[in-house]
Structure formats: structure tokens, C-alpha cells
Length: 287
Image (cartoon, rainbow, N blue to C red; front, side, top):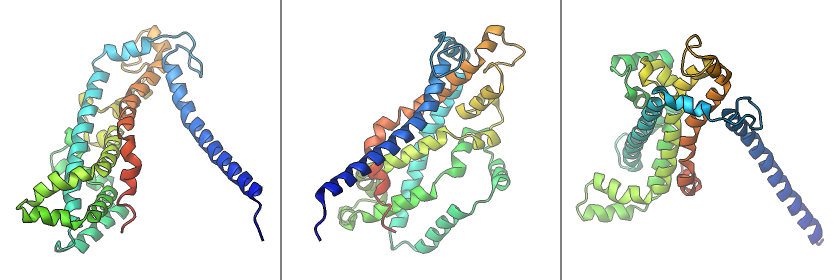
């Protein structure tokens, strides 16, 4: 029995319409809160429309040393942490990609075990304390140095690289470190860029680790500072010491800080977008 081509075309058009509709609704749900934050930070009266346009909130938060210092600290932690995490993840993934590695199966089982079970908040805190990392910016980086998921996917990608490349380099007298950094990593750029983005976003948005391990207020990253600002009526000062104009702008100040804390990490996405899809798919199929 022959199929009706007109009916098939209608079904395709309806399916496309349904997909675009779902995507449009999803985009709308994501954009509306962000739009509200933007408009509220630029007006004295909060809402979805800018009323009584003003930049006083932005002028105020940058008139103090608190927010710029916190932004610089967060940027430093994010850049340094991403580089260090990618370095150690690549080293371990390259080692586990060698099937001749003694104890390889045991190491992989141990890594998978950490994806299912963790030590918990209190034991981890005591480990960080005993290693002298309290009130150190490295306390945000070292306890979660390697992501098991990123490690396994990157290992699978390294395994998919033809072994002839490494054998040729070994014949030429290259050390394994040289092979990794001069041959393997350059052709693994999509995966490294993707996992670097994951690490950077995770470090930038870190909150609980900084709240637990950093007790000095002048070392707070942006997310911890943002929490304090949200719970103080006028933002960067105590409620008793601020004037009435700042009290009236308290909501705008909070929204302005949210914008300042969000925009820098959003600016990273356009530069890594071309690597994102390829990087996350490559190595994730092979077990």
C-alpha cells in the first residue's frame, strides 16, 4: 500500500513546528528572569520595564574595593584552577588510556566508585584543615582536583587516537610527557576546551567550598560575597551605616551585583561554543 506524500509532509511540518515551539518556550523561560535582573539593575523601581533609568547601583558597587577585589580573586581562582585541573586530568587520563598500565582496571573501579560515593562534608573539612588549606584559595581547587566524569570521557577519547602516532614518537625517542603535550593534547583541543569550560564554570560558581574553607572576608569569591549582599539590605555595607538613597536602591544593587557576577563567565561561552558539541560527544560513546 502506497503512502500519502502529502500526509508525510504535514507530519514533518507539524514535528518541526512542535520542536521550534518547545525551543521557543524554553528560551523564553530562560530569558525572562535574566531580563528582569537587567531591568531591575538599571532602574530605581524593579520590574520588567526600565523605569527611572539610573546607573547609581553600578557606580556604588564599583566605588568600594570589596566587589572588584572579589572579582579579581574569583578570576584568579578560575583561571589557575582550570589550568591545574586540566593538567592533572590530562595526565591521569593519558595514563589510564594505556591498556598495559599495571592495575589499570583497579584504578578505573576506584574512580567510578568516587562517582557514586563520597566522604561527606565533615570528613572532607577535616582533611582540608589537616592539610593546612583553610583560608587558602587552593582549598577551592585541590579537594575537587579531578572530575571522574571528565576523566573517563577524556580517557576514552585518548584511547580512540591511533596508537601509531604514539609508537612513531616513541621510535623517534620522545618521552611520554612530550608525546602527551606535543602530539596528543593539540589534537584533543575540542575535548580539552569543553572540559575546561566545565571546570571554569564550576569554579566560578563555587559557593559551599568557599563558605566552609575560607573564613576571611577579604578572600571571599564572588558567589560568597553575592550571598552576603543579598542578605544585607543595601548590599556592600551594614544596614545601619548606609544612607536612605542606598536603601531605596538596595534591590537595584543586588541585581547589579548579580549581573556583574554572571556576565564574565557568560563571555567565555562564545569563544568555546564551536568546540562544545564535538568535545562532549567525542569519547563519550566508547566504554
